[in-house]
Image (spheres, rainbow, N blue to C red):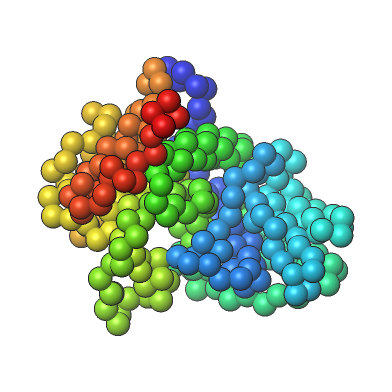
Length: 308
């Protein structure tokens, strides 16, 4: 298979346990950030980021904001690192570690640094009833899978940042949502969305309080057993799934009763210019939603500098 950028393969089926173990580790780290970071709209304060070292929380405040600390899954050393603004450093190996062992060791490191935090220890939305401290059966951290996934996320992070910079409206940072383990960037029209019903989860009510078009990448799940880029418009305008997407390999699928645009990662591996293919996908999905939802696209588009 021709691979112009030397993007790594990310097969899903043979990496289910590797992905799930990493996902659980990211949930533990993410829940710590959730508990200790000041609230920001649409849950933007709970996310993780792709860094030169791996996947990181960014600075988390403690001691009433006098100090900060950062937690990073280092994909080069395959160690969990905690670094504080006091220049305290501690790390431990991720190789052969159980989820329970990871949780216990991380909490001990934080305690040693006088960082006190209590989190909800049940995994979120993964159909796992045990708490993190009891999950000894998940111990499948893979150096190869984690490094390959990070390499793809690092590339996608740059593409999403370029795309995000083309929009004058409210746009979130490019960040990793640990509940579903997808890297995402979202644009907002500025208009409120219709209120959700009482049965909706609080997390969804805050995430979708305003009209938005979201774009993301995830490494596959039971519903789509391969890595893919996606986009959806909320609320979804009538007829959006009849709009043309680019490139020709992209398509609309049904996602819980709502149209979602999909570009499969594997279809990029033969592309002459994978970056442009992704940008074309993002732009076509945005136009499909924004134009049908009557966003003021002309006002929201950032022109090239030579047009200013």
